[in-house]
Amino acid sequence: MLSKKRVVLMILALLLALVTACSSSGDEQTIKIGGKPWTEQYILPQIIGQYVEAHTDLKCSV
Image (cartoon, rainbow, N blue to C red; front, side, top):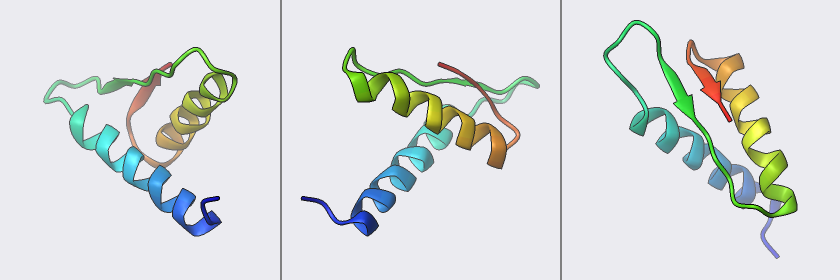
C-alpha cells in the first residue's frame, strides 16, 4: 500500500498540474475537474475542486 505521505504528494502534484494546465488569460478563470465512473472518483473531484477554490482565485466545475 501507498504511504500517507506518498498519497498526499500525488494529490498535490495532481493539483499543481490541474492549475497549471487550466490557466487562462481571461478575466474569469474556471477549471473543469472530472473523474471516472467509480465510487471514489465521484468524491475525489469534489474534494479537489473545493481545495482549489479555497486556496486559489480559480472557480471549479466538476
